[in-house]
Amino acid sequence: MPRDANTATGSAIEGLVEARYPHEKGWVTFREFTTFQSSRRIDIVALNFWASKEARHAIEVKRTRSDFLRELDQPEKRRWAWDHFGHCWFAVAPGVAEKSEVPEGWGLLVMTKNGKKIIRKRHAKAHKRQPSKDIDLAILRRAATIAAAAEREVEQRVAKARAGRRLVRVLGEEVDEEALAELVEKRVEERFWEQYEHRRQRLREKEDEVHGMARGIEYLRRKIPWSSGLRTGALTEEDAAKLLNVAVARELQSRIETLRTAHAQLGLLLDAAESSDTDAA
Image (cartoon, rainbow, N blue to C red):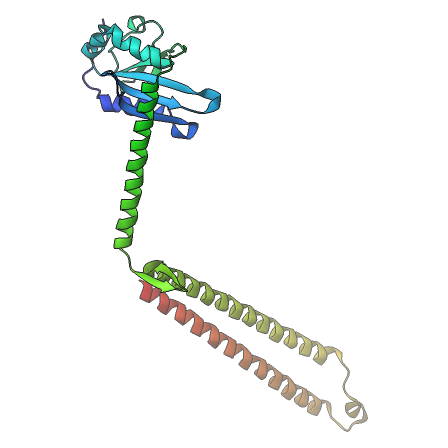
């Protein structure tokens, strides 16, 4: 005979049972379900109103062996659940019940010893339930109660959130001051890095231009013949070389100054970025 299982709690079993009926698949669960006209109570009911699989399950949770045996002594209670729900189950702690002890047609769910899962040991027989306005009204009442509680919770959270923030008016709309400040700060940072990348690109272009000119001048010095003055003796080779060196030096000096200016601008941008990071820290 199975022993009593005193280590499990009813709430733990109920939580595992409810996890078998996920909301995203159309299930709704109620605990401690009662009706207007009956004193009967069901520990958990699970409802699904999808047209493809409309279903109503009744689950009796039994934490101890003695609790399960008392349930077996109340056939009229089980008959009421059987008449009004299409699937009926016992959900028990480990060691509380055996499959052979469960009434005909009822399913059996058993929680594992570590309390992390609940395993189906026996299928619940699907059967045709009797229509009941009392059951339907009780379901509507519970659904309305849950909806009202959820609405009150949302209102309380909104009121609490508004009480803890400062609002400013922007273009005729109330905006959270902190959120607005974060948005402005983010946009300023994005603009800064846009300018920074633009300046870096221009600097790279200037560097490429200077290097290209240097290569071109060197090519001219090596490949192009001297002028007619040099050939006729009016200009010596030494004088021509001096004039060419002066022209090259001036052009390179101009490009170097441009490069220095671009480097200085880039340095100012980097200093501003470091200062902004220091202030934020």
